[in-house]
Amino acid sequence: MARHGLRNEEHNVESEGHGVLEAGHGVGVGGAEQNGDVDIVVAEQEEQSRDGEPLYELRPGNAAAPDVARDLTAADLAARISQLDTGHTTWVLPSVDRICPVLLRHGARLRRCHDLALTERLLRNSQGRHDEPHGLAAAYARARGLPPPPDADEHDPVDTGQAALFAPRGTGLPDGVTPAEATDVVLAEQQRALQRAPAPERLRLLVASESQSALVAAEMSHHGLPWRADVHDAVLTELLGRRAANGRPSTLADLAERVSEAFGTPVNPDHPPSVVRAFRRAGIDVPSSRAHVLRDVDHPAVGPLLEYKELARLHAAHGWSWLREWVHDGRFRAAYVVGGVVSGRWATRGGGALQIPKVLRTCVRADPGWRLVVADAAQLEPRVLAALSGDRRLADVSASSDLYASLATDAFGGERARAKIAMLSALYGGTAGEAGQLLARLRTRFPDAVRYVEHAAAAGERGELVRSRLGRTSPPPSEQWRALTGNADAGVAAHRASRDWGRFTRNFVVQASAADFTSVLLALLRRALADRAPDAELVFFQHDELIVHCRGEDAEAVASVFQTCADEAGTLTFGPRCPVRFPLEATLVDCYADAK
DNA sequence: CGAACTTGCGCC
DNA sequence: AAAGGGCGCAAGTTCG
Image (cartoon, rainbow, N blue to C red):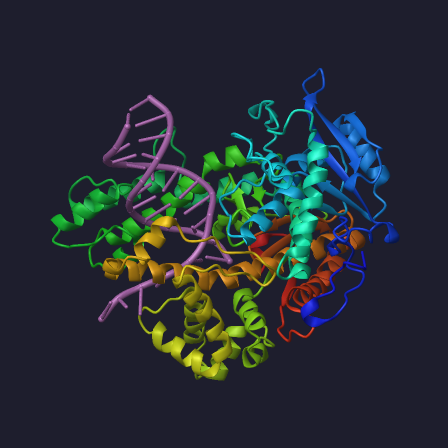
C-alpha cells in the first residue's frame, strides 16, 4: 500500500507500485482500507476432522470484522483463498512453511503474505534475543505480557510430506484462544514493534521480502529441482565403478587397495588416525590427513589417497543412497529453510541441496519442451560492501561485470588473483600469507570500504551487536565469551576469542546484507514471473544463484526480467542513489552443467 | 546400544 | 608470529 510502502526515510523517496513488497499487512494501521488492502489471517485449528485431517480457520486481520470461517478442510481453504485474493490481500500465516505445502497440493497460490514466525524472529533478533522462541505460543505470550508457555512447540517442523511424524499436539496457547485469534494479536503487536524499530522502513521491507521468500521456498520444495536419476547413475558408475552389493564400488575399492600397497600395510583411507599413523611409520609427520596437507607430501600413497578421498566423498554424500532417498519422479525435493542461518541465508534440511557437487550439475535437465534459466549474482558480496560503505571508488569498480578484474586494474597491477585475495581478506578477516599486505593495499585505495568492515570487526571484538542493511542483527556472544574476554588474566585466549568474534561480525554485515538483497530479489522475481510467465517455476536458489524452469517459449521473457529485478532489488535495499551495479545475467540452457 | 562429539570435505 | 566468514552431511570414535 502506498501510504506505508517503501518510502525510505534515509533517502526521502517514495517507491510506488511494488505490490508484494508493500507492507500491506495492516502495518500502517488505518491506511489499509483506503487502498483496498486487507489482511486475512489463516491458521491451523487445534481440532482436526474426524479423519484426522487438519482444519483451518480464516478471519479478517486486526479484528476488523467478526466474519470468521472455521472448520475448513485444506481443499475448502484453497478454494476460499483463490476466491478472496483480490491482489490487495495479505495472507497472514503463523508460519508459511507449515501451511503452504498443503495449499500448494490443492492448487492455491498466495500472492502476498506475512509470515508471523519469520517476523517474530527478526524482531527478537533485533533486540539481541536470538535464543528466544519465535513460534505462535511464545509470541502470543509476549504480546499479552504472559509468562512464556511451558515447553511450547516452537519449532514448526518443515513439511516433508510425512504428516504422521508430527502427531497432533497442544498449541501451547491458553485455553480458549484459537491459533487464528493468537495470530491476530501477535500481528498487531508486530505492527507496533515495527513502528518502533530503529529504521522501520528498512525492517518492514525485510519483513515483507522474507515473507515472500518463504513462499518461494515452499514453492521450490513443491516443484522440486528437475533431476535425471539415469544420468546420475551413469555419472556415479563412470567415476566410482560398478556398485558392490555391500562395500565399496569397484574403482573406490581399487584405490583403497593401491593406498595399502603404497604403504605396504593395510590402511583404511576412511580413518584419518590410521592414515596419519601410516605416514608416521613411513617417516613422514603430518598433522592430519586433510587433502590440503597431503598435497604437499611426497609419498606414493598420496596420489591414490587424494583420488580416493574425492570419490569417497561423492559416494557418501551424493551416491546411490542419496539418489534413492531424495530423487523421486524426476525431481529432487529439498526442504528449504528461509533464514535458517543467523546471517539470513537459507539453509536446507535433508538432501544437502546447497552443496550439490559440480560434477552432478549435469543431472539437472529441463523437461522436454522446457528450459532452464540460470542466473547468478556475480561477486555479490564485494558489491554489497561497496553499497553498504558508500565507497565511491569501489562503486566505480562495480560497474564492471568482472569486479575482480576491474579491481585488479585499479589497484593490483592487473593481477586478478591477488585482487580477489585482498577482497576476500577484507570480507573474511584473513591475514595469512600475503593477504595482510594485499589488504593493506586495498585499504589505501578503498579506505571507506575497508573501514566499514573493520568497524564491524571492532564492534564484534567489544561484544557489540552489528546489523545488516535492512536490520538483521548478529547474535550476542556467549556468556562464556564474555567471561573469557572480560578476564584480564586470560591473555592470549581472550585476545583470540575477541578476534574470532570480530571476524564473525565483520563477515556478518556483508553476508547478512547480501541476504537482504537476495531476499528482496526473490520477492521481486516471484512477482515478475507470475506476471510474465505464470507456468514458470523457481526451482533452485543457493545464496546468489537461481534457476527457473519454464516452457521453452517463455524462456526469453523469463530471462529478460532478471536484470530488471536485480536493479530494483539494489535500489530498494540500498536506496535509489546507490551507484553500485548488481549484474544478474541469465543463461538459457537445457542442462545446468552448460551454464557458465 | 544410541547419543554426542570430531574429522573432513562439499557448496557459497 | 600467525591469524580467513557461513553452512550440512557422513563416517569414525567416544561417552553415557
